[in-house]
Image (cartoon, rainbow, N blue to C red; front, side, top):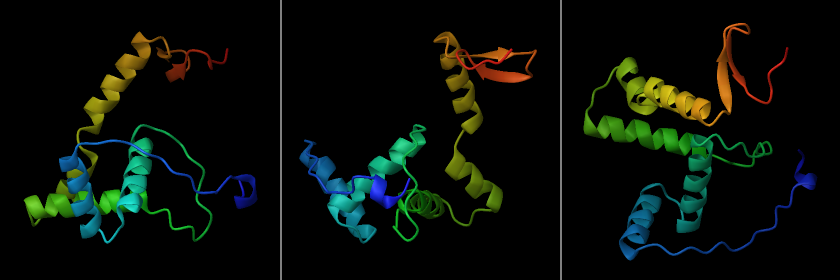
Length: 132
């Protein structure tokens, strides 16, 4: 989708959070050299990706770095907590327990009848998207 096909006009989004949380966001934003708005926008986009939300791809040079900044933060936090770390230790720190998370997600999706395991097809399939 090209830039001309998207509405890129800026708009105000307002939310209310406890003062301590706003202060934490401000501190973290300052550490990253960002404004509060940039920080919140980046964290929301990174969180959406974490939940599987797919947004439009940024235009070349658009500077959408939320995902990279999130990974940068995770690496720095892991190293600050326990340096030095090997490649394997860093990988474990940034991926967490992905196998358990995947298993839990698959179980929930099966319980909700959104997907199932098909031995005939050799893997998981969406309930509404299975081919014969």
